[in-house]
Image (cartoon, rainbow, N blue to C red; front, side, top):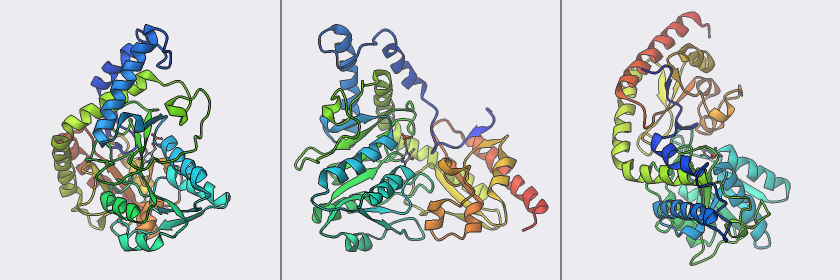
Amino acid sequence: MNLPIYLDNHATTPMDQRVLDAMLPYFREHFGNPSSIGHVYGWEAEAAVSKARETIAHAINSTPNELVFTSGATEANNLAIKGVAEAYFSKGRHLITVQTEHKAVLDPCKYLETLGFEVTYLPVQSDGLIDLALLEKSIRPDTILVSVMAANNEIGVLQPIAQIGAICKQYNVLFHTDAAQAIGKIPLDVQAMNIDLMSLTAHKVYGPKGIGALYVRRSPNKVKLAPQIQGGGQEQGRRSGTLCTPQIVGFGQAIAIALEEQPAENERIKGLKDRLWQICGKIEGIHLNGHPTEGLAGNLNVSIEGVDGNALLLGLRSVVALASGSACSSTNVAPSHVLTALGRADKLAYASLRVGIGRFNTMAEMEEVGQAIIKTVKTLRKSQVF
Ligand SMILES: *Cc1c(COP(=O)(O)O)cnc(C)c1O
């Protein structure tokens, strides 16, 4: 067994060997610029980019020209939120999002507030789901965008995206979803779910870091978007910059594999999670965070009473690599904003563990990690004074 066991698959995933194999030729042999329309080097690169674009479009039931490649979901979220705000500000200056969103959604929203936009941050219920009636009530005549993530990166909760899309359509408000944790894990269909903009990233689904995409609806109603990066006019002027062919090829390959293996993988990963919870659930004062059934197969988020979260991580670090609260704020001593939004007391939030189980984890690892958590909690409870 490779120690420490990697159970931080919400932060990033190891790249699949098949993805790397697909990418390698595009670093050296086929190094052309996909925008070079005058020679075979450019054509080869453009053909590879087109193929990946088609694969990703097919996975979300969009057309290829509705995808804008970006450096990842952070950039896609920024482009969606700031790009829509800038393009629609004469229609209205109100946006709606959720308290438990990723910082890559919350921070652009906060920035827009400094420019005079108004943002409603919807609370969540204790299971992490939003209240659809409250969403509907929060929509105003000047609301231009609703942004609700598909799957939460801390507690794995899956929001009712299709229902949210239907509400947005009914009120003629654009709907953006951050699907960084959802793509390749749950079925996504921009038509059936009435999604107008969707952020994607490759590195949460066994692809390379530094590549993602924003889906932007073209029909029946074309979404207007003000570009945030200007220059050579790539991606129909929506995101300039030379396309990174190897990363895009890797993204396409990662999505193709995920699509093919997703149903069976979800079953297997859920089996791993159930086993880990069977072992750890016996710990006294352990609580499951998030919704009991509406969640990502590989997510397990727990709070443990009377144990310091950082001490727990330190105690476990030689056996298992996982996160306390959000990976993006693990140096931050404040409790996770997601657990706080669930109404978890600060003390409980401090002692939280986020387990992200992925493609390369095994049942034997669950046994090892489960026993290690039990043992470490026991040791800490003996030595800590609370
Ligand atoms: C990882 C993540 C992001 C950021 O994606 P990058 O591609 O790393 O920029 C945004 N939103 C969610 C929900 C994430 O999990």
